[in-house]
Length: 173
Image 1 (cartoon, one colour):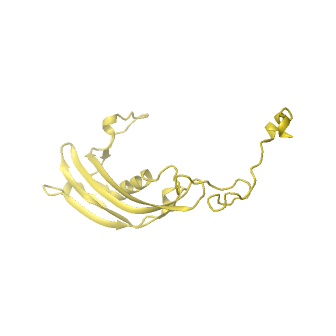
Image 2 (tube, helix red, strand yellow):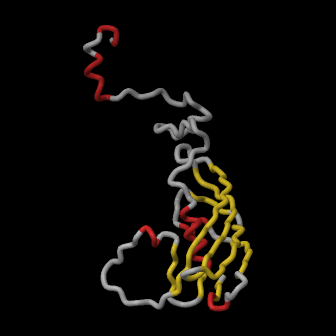
Image 3 (cartoon, rainbow, N blue to C red):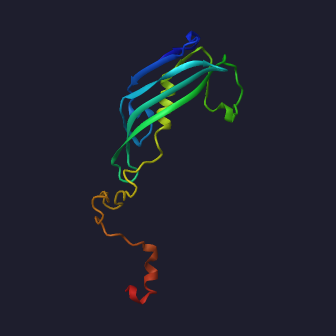
């Protein structure tokens, strides 16, 4: 959705929409599915620009990091962003961001597209890893079986680097 900032006067601009975003478009292997995203909020005039307050709700399906079973997570996230309209200025080299730049979006035209903001929030809400349960045993490295369902699938293999030490113990033979 494109929001024309120069049309916002005393009353804030409010929106409420449902957006479908394919999980694969976010480029995160752990993420396998997204439900339709409920996304809404308001943009109002504020000191120094405009204030965007929004909320998004959806369910994401991720793969357990250990056993690869699907895990569903309900996500509710709030966003508070200051939008500044400044004409683009040519920059040379890198720009050092300050802590005051966090939570600030600078645009060079008096309009914003909410889709890139939404996509960024979706990507930020994908965890680095997720477990189906805290004590997930994962997959067997020898046969690939789910150790949560069959914990005794393969006998544990000894480490060959320790074999020479077995000869030193009389009970190990």
